[in-house]
Length: 516
Image (cartoon, rainbow, N blue to C red; front, side, top):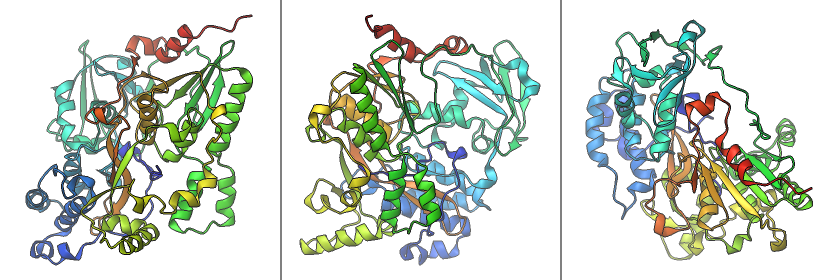
């Protein structure tokens, strides 16, 4: 189940995007309202058309989340007052948010990337100041009562129509992160005319912050006790630790990206690899080789419990997840996700080689490719499109059932678990491979995904739109919007200050040391 490499879950902090071919549709561009409109109005009409012609929710037979015609008319009137990309972006994002799809979003315009100098801690019960500009250090750790003279909950509710998210956990994660973004505040009825952010704490102390350009730097942070646990967070995409004196291996699977992912994308897009690119690729690890070494070590050490930590994994390429699953159970024995794809003009533009092969197969079978239909990818027309087979040697799976790990599997998830990482957690849960512990994830088990990137021609605004719908293996649970942990372990503020990791503590309490 390959997925696009670029998953920009935290909008304002996204890396620069590669250039895209601007989106066009002659049928829209020949309309009178398009010709008469200003640049923002024209891009609004194209954006709504892009959603209508590309997103799976607007396919024939599906219940559309809103009327594209009505949204175009209302948005067109509002866009008449927009004079820049920065002014149009929030209007388009409000439209995207109506899809309740965390993968479909409008990225903030670069001119809007200033920040309030603070970081927040939120656990769903309260909001506290975790870091702030040094001049306000006295307020660190205090519980926030109001923002801009509005109760915290009222402010949070005002953001719901502005964010793309899959579920409540996703909303809380984004809201906590984006409250430091003045561009988001400008869209809220809770914003101040002078752009300042006034915070009142539970003890009555007040501070007032003003926007600062660029990234937040040199903040004073709350002091907390050092964590005293065998596993320390790593920035590596994947790493493992054997817990001293215990039959436990702790795998930190932080990103579904590796050398093979990059090589596969180059092949899909027909990109020639230069010597410099090859040198860069050689410095990247391959997950399949890492996995083989990991399970060889697990067998040699007699490990009986494998912890797979996905709490920091926002997704990427699901073929890495298939590699890991093959070491837990034979792949052909698993119930898998089913996926339905919309073969839209935008999809064909971004995958021209695959689109041409599919068109030829459709013609040979006497069918016409319908861009308004959702196609089940289990259909024989899709079973051998050559995409996976051409890169199979890059994602080597375990083919020996006798080498599959048969011990206890514990999956750690958190709010940051998303997309391909969420698919992995759901596969493990729905196939009874292991138990899920931690916090609720921002990921909806049955979800839209597989991103198509786009750019609007007049304002240069960019974003992503889903092209597929993925249904979880346990179809009876398709309506669930969250993969609930079997054991919920969310750190409180007091535990955070004391350096307590509830997940590692829970694992240590339940895994006995080796007998001497």
